[in-house]
Structure formats: C-alpha cells, structure tokens
Image: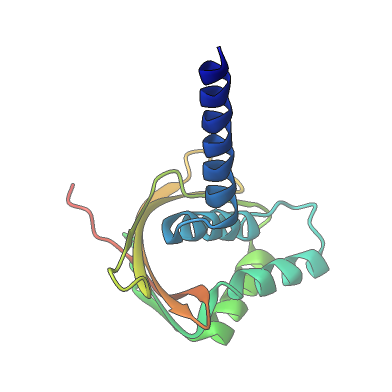
Length: 165
C-alpha cells in the first residue's frame, strides 16, 4: 500500500514538473505560433474600432517585425507588392485599416521549422482573410522568416508562396 502511495506521489510530482517546465519555458515553435496568432488578432478589426485603437493595433503589429523587414506579396490578378522596413509596413497597415470597414485574419495551420542553432526559423502557413462584403474571403500560403534578435523572435521577411494548382 505504501508503495502505491509513493508511486502516485512521484507520478503527480513528475506531471507537475513537466507542466511547470512547458508552461514557463515554451519551445521556440510554441513562441512563434503564439506570436503569429497575436499578429492575426492585431491585424483583424471591425467598423466599431476607433481610429486610436486602429493606430495602437498597427503599432503592436509592427512590433513583431524587425526594423529592416521585407514583405513581398504576389496575389493572383495583382501586381507584386514589396514593402521595405517596419515604418513602411506600419503605414500600409494604417492605410488598409482606413480603406476597409472590416478585416478578419487567421492562420489555421502554422508549421514552424527552427534552425539547429535556434537563432532563426521559418513558418509556413495559410492566411485566411475576410473583408467587408467578401463572404468567401481569400486564402494564401505565406512564408514568414524569423530571427532571434536580442532574445526576441522577430519577423525579417514575409512572402507569398506560389502553390501549384
């Protein structure tokens, strides 16, 4: 009987230690997934959001990227759009918010590959976006490149991935 109690106690302690470790020391993949999900939340808005809230969200969103970020977007039927730097990205975010009443963004499938040195990573994902008046929305494959800079995972490049149809 005493062995059963001890075994249960050791098992409970081991489970608590594992929970504590994973909760307080997440893997780079978990950190990057959480950041991408936060980015999707900050990118999303509706018509009831104030301009001040929109500016604050744009500021928070641009905080996830490196100062020299490069964004290369190539959507079917549109010209290739290249954005260079955090400030230009922030301006484009604000402009998009002013031109739309609603935008809902989510990343339903995020696959993160961290380099062996754990200083860079690539996240391949699908971006789903719905705007006002567009019931079907759009879905695009994107590739986010991250670098660990001063202890933070920052996006250094975002690009569309051309998918064979």
